[in-house]
Length: 499
Ligand SMILES: NC(=O)c1ccc[n+]([C@@H]2O[C@H](COP(=O)([O-])OP(=O)(O)OC[C@H]3O[C@@H](n4cnc5c(N)ncnc54)[C@H](O)[C@@H]3O)[C@@H](O)[C@H]2O)c1
Image 1 (cartoon, rainbow, N blue to C red):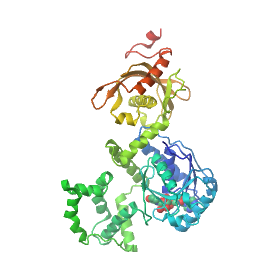
Image 2: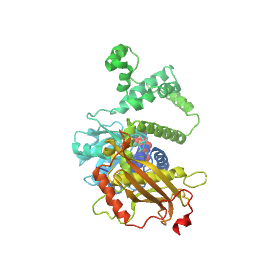
Image 3: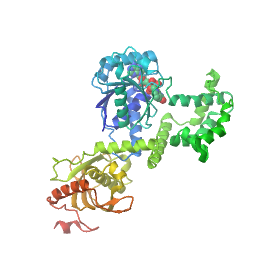
Image 4: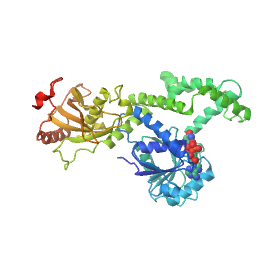
């Protein structure tokens, strides 16, 4: 079941607060922000543009970056009707505690109060709060709108039920909440990164390697593996067939050697200048914005690749995508549904990259949208993830699309679906695509779907409850006048049939 909050308040709208804003808005949640910096709205606009761009490439699901957002003049106004409040002010304990106290005093009693802190302990942050039970740390990673990891931990006085509720909410936002059961400075991921970072600083300080060499040592090797298998699983494979035991036997003795230095070098002015100069040289004159876009494009491609394998962050993305479709498609067929008209199950908006050199929606996107409408129908009749995982599905075996009008970028559209004929294995259907603002018909598609046993690779009857729903819709639609453009052959003059 979906567990999304109705409204979120974000206190602090810098790199992380703005990233949270995108994450919430992408899930259709309204957001109120408070940040005293007059530049915050401009920075948020830029980040939302980037997040929307990334998400258009990440999923074809109708992304709902249409939750509304507004800035409030103060904390009290921002949190007044929030279900989730995320504090993302600078990492200073005094500032965080004062901010959290103000939030706690003004937020509705049921609201969850989360801090983005990278390492301050929740037990200390919740001291002095009137309702410490609803306070927790939800530590995300930059960019918050793309990276799923969020470390989730409570303090001594946090209510365990609140942590469970937060876990469900963060999952519903497409994130991967990692519950930590011990309060430690720096939590988990930053501790690991810092161990590497300390060593890297030593190597630069001792003139053993440059920033450039150190980054290459990661991006051409270990970095590629980390997204797939983390550290322990990678080393397990390093042990060959004998696994971890062999790996430890072989490389364990090296742990005794003083390879790495866990105490960081002193950040002297010389070392600071050296690192900044090497880092600037690496950027090669490219702006932060250019580098952020490149990072996002690559992250999207990595996530898509992992999704293909249903692995790691890709599995999380696939589950989130399912939820986005479920949110945008209507609930399943119910007794009281009015079936005396075509089903209206899918709505969307033409994305700029769907438009081709003629300035109109390119032809492959028509098939995608009709496919989305077919998916919406399948969900409506009960073909869900469990049904597909059990080895049954519908395959499209024939499609005839008619392009009636050009479709411009940004247009809101909706699609309707009629069943022309059904039996226990086949569904013959007719989709129509309309421009929402004036109901102009833009295209039609006639399709034949075949129910298959996907493991055996052959057609088979649909499960009785699904076949029953189809029969019910099919019988109702059979009473409607036949659609004017159904049953046509390619190139058939339109006038002949309508005469
Ligand atoms: N940057 C990261 O990679 C990262 C990652 C995870 C967590 N965090 C944590 O997130 C928090 C925010 O970090 P950031 O990188 O976004 O910092 P940032 O400096 O980019 O943003 C902080 C924002 O808070 C605003 N602010 C200052 N005082 C405020 C107040 N009293 N009320 C409301 N807003 C106020 C500032 O104007 C600024 O826009 C920190 O706790 C940090 O440790 C940062």
